[in-house]
Length: 295
Image (cartoon, rainbow, N blue to C red; front, side, top):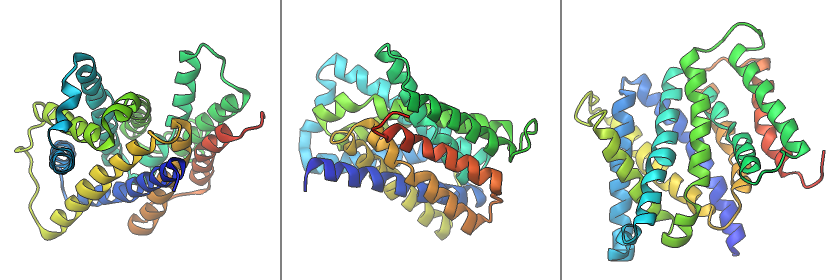
């Protein structure tokens, strides 16, 4: 199996698990779990699990990112601006709205990546990128208003957190590539989750607002933290070592698809024609970018 094939498989598996996890998080909130507590607890536990696993595989080599100040600084920046930002904003978007709208709004990030890369390389966006940007704006407008322009159909916090989650996904995709190439996906993810978890613990201590430890809550937490967070983030980050960020973002279309379908089935989320069209417009933007011919 070639590295590109593995990269494609990992880039699909990560978003699929995220889509499932978004609904699991929604279920946790429905059972009274506090969003701020969950954000802190998830980062700390997932980071600890990954660090232990990485140490059993690599031993003292997991401390390599701290041998040089530049690498350590890069890791800290990624921990807060990438890992913590995308996790926290996404959790808040689900709490403020629902898993379906949160995942779709977060998926505006490929357009943001295209804009960032255009600015970085001092190039005007290609014609297909311009079309994709228009699609993303119209799609977001349709979802936010249910097609009734001038009337916001979701809460303002749900819209803002959802779009901020998209910004966080941009940082999460672009920042860690050099770190991954040098130290590996597991080490980078483990330290990023641990560092960001410790950081957010000063703002939202894990011993405050803990949930009632029912079996259902423990089971959902276990899936969300071990599978939907630790494992999913590692496989996605690892895919970036083998394929381009734009390709990984394209395959990320599986996340809003999975999240939306499961939200409709489990929570009976109202999803009208305008929402469907808006979602299709947003998801289609990555396929427009991936087209090799010019539009």
